[in-house]
Length: 179
Image (cartoon, rainbow, N blue to C red):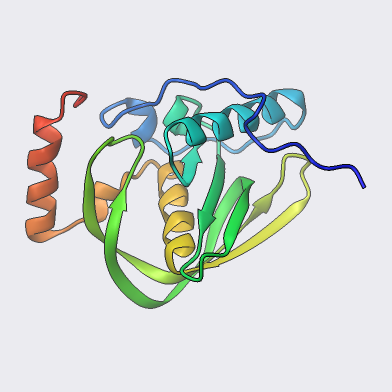
């Protein structure tokens, strides 16, 4: 049996889009062409995510307004989930709503308590156009919801409320990278 290469090992680390970049605040387009360009994008996304020490990355976070995200994320039982989803749709988000710490590679160094459901199901296709259904619980469910939000043009700060939101906004204004 041939071992599959580790994702990202031949990818290019791309520049991260930061909060304020218009690509992060608009819904991404459906992927319609499958082939080597999409495979290269996914490989580069893994390389970029690993270089930034993230657990998920949406294509618009590297300036590509297409509906693709990658992940290498544990759930609350420390089971590793590794993969990518093209044209994902969040089809279920339910269970208990948990207020938990959330950060984002497009808001480096910042974190805020963000409400998310503890179970999520995402459907889409893989890079070959084959159907994919991914179910996550706990931290992985948070990751799936976070990445789907990105592809809809939403950044997690938009889900933060009250004092946590004011604190996050202050931190954003102080950040050296702030757009």
